[in-house]
Length: 101
Image 1: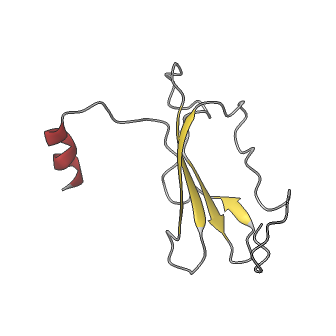
Image 2: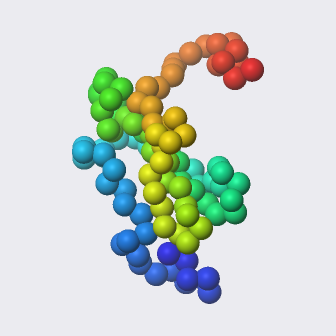
Image 3: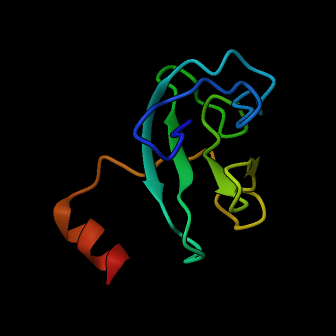
C-alpha cells in the first residue's frame, strides 16, 4: 500500500483475491482504472484458463475490485454484469470491427 510519502507498506486486509472456489490458475490481463469516475483506482482482471472449457469455471470468470475510496476493495463484477466466463476469438478483424461499432 502506498503510504503517501513514496513508500510502500504491506497490507493483507486491503484486497481479498480469493473470490472463486478454484486455484485461480490461468492467464490474466489486468488493468487499474477509475471505471466509475469517483477519483480512485479500481482493478479489473480478465481471466482465461487454457484447457478449461466451461464458462462457469471460476478460473474463467472475470472479476472487478471496486475501491471504496479508502483503499478497501470489494469484488463487484456481477453488479456490473461483467462476471462472464466466455472469451471471444480468434475472429477476423472485420468481425471485431463490426462488434465494436
